[in-house]
Image (cartoon, rainbow, N blue to C red; front, side, top):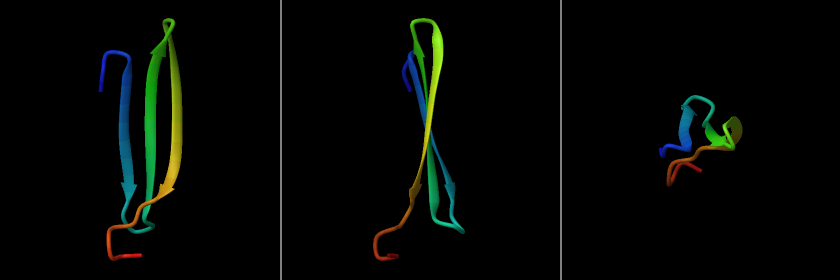
Length: 45
């Protein structure tokens, strides 16, 4: 987290999906980006 950026992860343990959320302030405007990823613990693949 910085004054220009906020990022956090959302985990769904049952489906092993993580969603990465990012928010930036660019030239006074809010920019957003989210991406889904498969979340696997070591040895759980």
